[in-house]
Amino acid sequence: MNAADFLSHLRKNHSEVNILNLLKDLIPFLIVVFLFFIPFPHTTAIKEIAFYLSVLITLVLAVGRNIHFDFSTPLSLPFALLLGWAGLGIVFALNRENTAGDIYAYLIKYLALFFLIYNFFGTRRRLVYLIWIVIASAAVFSIWGPIYFYGTLGNNISTKFGLERFTEVPSNIIGICTIPGILFSLNLLSRGKTFYLKIILLLCLLAASAATILTQTRSAFFAVLVSLGLVLPRNRKTMLPLILILSAMVIFLPIKDRLKPEAIEEKLKGDNRIKIIYTYFEMVKDYPITGIGFGMQTYYDEGLLTKYNTRVPEKYRQSFLHKAPHNLLVDVTVRLGFVGLAIYLYIFFIYSRMTWTNIRHGKDDFIQSWSLCSFAAFMSYFIIGMFENVASGPPALVLHLLFAMTAILWKLRKEAAEASISKK
Image (cartoon, rainbow, N blue to C red; front, side, top):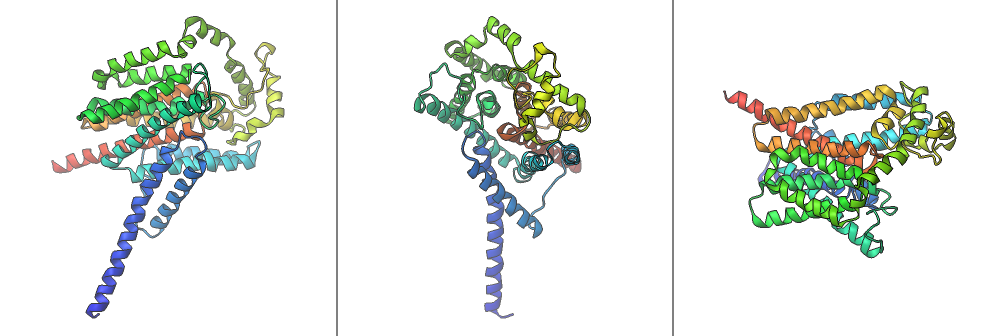
């Protein structure tokens, strides 16, 4: 090979390396775009383009063996069990076509997102970037949303934020998207060193808190209190001012009327959720093992709902048929049977055990504090999920984001422990 051929070969290889590096760096950028727009309505096209392009580039690089895609997390087995059981359920599903479609749309895609985050944000530096995206997304949504809802649309401040307008992120689940922003801002605020950084975090925290309270959702308010209680031990310095701010918001905003004892008592007595659960448990009686199938459109079969609603004692029958159970555990049991419920609880158990291991055996504050913070956000999801439909859409995306964060922290803790042992 002469000098000219050598230089040409070198330039070609250098160009290929640059393209590969560019593609590798493009994937986390696309994931960030997808995650940022999770709470925003009418952004499906942006999210779909970002998601599928990141998947396509990952597949191309994986086929060419230019990246190593890691599936080794404690959550991989329960995820595989869930996917396998849901797939087997196609055989027994009442709506097989929709079940097959929803397994892809609301299970496989979410698992793909989990592993994309796990593989491309697996360092401390990139995990911090991810945390900032969650904060920024919640803050921008919490500023833009109320301005648009109350200012542009002209709704009265007494109207629940997002009511009948944000169909993709309705009032009752906005908290699932904003509460992680509150918790992450608080955690960074407690550890911030510069004045300007603290001001930015405080503004993000206030915006997300205000948006959450403006929804006037009791479950979200209770979820905030529980999640803040969980992170209290590691955020004492900033917790008291935040509690005072939240208390002031509650006093001056309409949610105070919904938190009065008589209002809560009235809600408990007249809540339709008891009647809804009665109807859906009648389905469980007929399909206790396999469920009716993973497909969510099965709930839109009015003939099916009417059939089971008539089985319920008359005083517990629904006057208006609700096309979803409004409870995560009931929803899972209806669609996947008690076996599916056991697998879901197994996933939550493994996730909780990973969190406990990170907190108990993490060698530094980074691993411990962010594991606790992620778990507190998960608890807010779970609490709201006891009253709302959270198994798909933005809530489920947030859930898998939290799963991925804890899995990354688990891997970082494990790597640190192995490095420590090798030095001895």
